Image 1 (cartoon, rainbow, N blue to C red):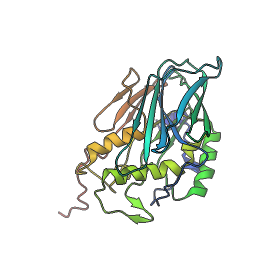
Image 2: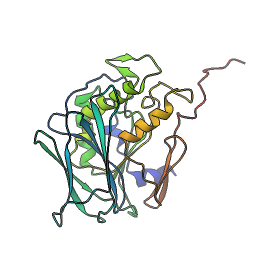
Image 3: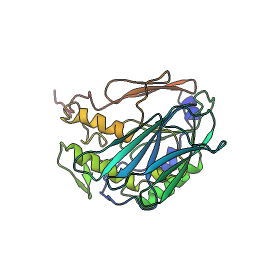
Image 4: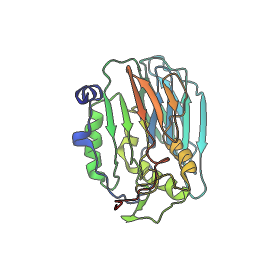
Length: 283
């Protein structure tokens, strides 16, 4: 079974996986690129998530490379919270063409245009290339650049983020007092989105994500987290995977089932319902 799974998923973890360690805050401007992620995608649909500043109102266009026509958006929503200058723009397209190439253009109010390439996803593909990643330590920027370059050179069909994409409970090399507030967690998510190269890649890759304890805001966090329901909404804002369909369905917490490539993938929420860790119990 282990051998079959390895062949199916084509794991890229060996040389590209970052370490699970503390994170410093590096909030800054997006510079010459936006922070963008392509979320749940099928042969005809895709969800796009763009980190935006409150001072900017970018114009977003998706261009069909074959016809050079601009695709219509099925929906577009902006999400902001008090206590942060950053928000999320979420866009959904539902009339795309199978195995087709598109260019996403994001034009800022200053006139800068950020262009990314993307494709729809053939969910019936027999031998997909899937990158499985976790523990994205944005404190190691130079090492990250090498890792992300290596990963993207492998041209994965999908990326699975399986936890600790964000170390919300660490800032400036110090562990924060928990429980955190929603603005604190939101800003730590923004910090990571601004510096990790995955979100700056010129080629977008469909990505699905689940959280672990540091995304959840508490080391070894469990069901007692007082902000877990609001955290769930925050998580879905940053990782676009809300569509209920024949190939995707939500479960308890942030868990979900993804059916593709003749396989069933179950992403389990190991925090929202976890009993408190009592440590070693002496008998």
